[in-house]
Image: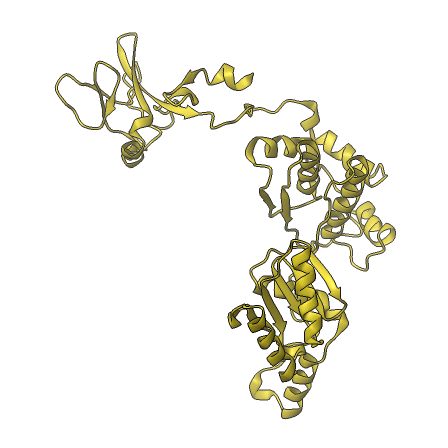
Length: 384
């Protein structure tokens, strides 16, 4: 295969590698502008490389055959650290320094120039248009998901998290799902896209799609990103039953429900503070998703953690944590812990959202429950 052809050498452990010249092969770099990369190596008759001369060693500088003073690609510190990777070879009467480049378990070489037609932008445009059932360029020149899939295949493991800070049309998400469908991987994606406005005049088709077809009040690039992931996920899930194509959407926003005081404290009245306290302390069903996700963060769990509903508005589980949003009977908590244990999902911590749980008897009951289960009091955490 490609690796066997290019990495044609093996070390003592049987690991495949190839030799690359250590001298920088670009003449725009040399002693004149890279003085820290111009120094001498010393090679003995067996090709062993050193930074210090001993009797009979040949001195090797990064000079070209015509006398041009070039430079190495490693500085002296890097060379000293990885000296074991260097080899000297005498070629046409001149010693040259080479470094070992290992395949590191790869099975495919990534070419410098990707020429497959699957990688062309036209392919990416066609894929996006098919997903949105349109001939209009709702998002112009998206990358091909097959290009991104190829790059991921070469550079990631099957349980990696792939981050794309400039999500655009959402190609990375589709590529991750496609690759998981292909090799059974469990890769996850984290995409970031600002709500960049779509100009109604300059991007008429995109604006109409978001406001008309999707029915969104504001036309932003983010809406295209999210819709592309939904449609690609739905299509792939149909083709590959059991494939996990779920994802969650989060916004970075200021406190929209005034759960923090919206004025300088010096200007606040007692009525302002009392109203704020009442708002925070009153369970609000619409805020439950936000509370749950903030509890995930507080407990150090990924935002992608699956949340199991045990009792609506009150008890949920995530990872090894029981999330308690409202006071219930302590026996109900005990039953939830036992049921999770029976299902192989042991819950070892209790996380209580303190602003909505102010029943001291309930909290004392939880403390007693932990003692009866021989769990330390530290397993009970008050959050909020």
